Length: 149
Image (cartoon, rainbow, N blue to C red; front, side, top):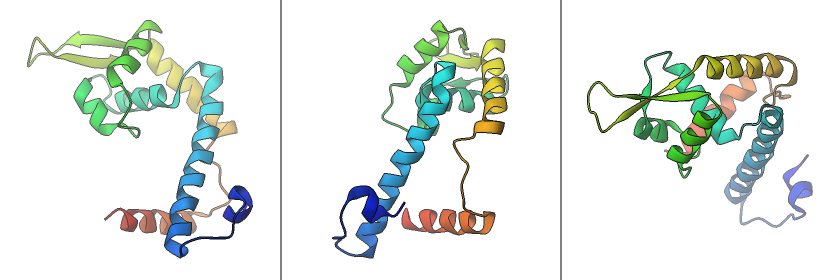
């Protein structure tokens, strides 16, 4: 759907303004798709983001502040998200070898299993499906990276 139809206007300050609005609308559209696809698993997109970060660490774990720095939504309350994931049995806090005041967060077996279920579900119902071909997606990625310089 064209941006003009989505937000019901044809008045923009210029093409860059229109592009910025298009990015915001597209991000909200994709975020909604992800939220809907995670609902059957009882996870928020922020919780899923933390689980993916932890999976990338294998079994070595990661400190809370390092999770926060890697989050897509950096305004999230990482400690609260970890508490909720812990209550679901998906993550565990371990004492750090470096500092007793610090905790290392790791995925539990249940957390790995949950991610495996989501991976299988997304093989058939991926929120990331697109009409873009790889070359178009690559160009889009390059342009978005350039914009943030």
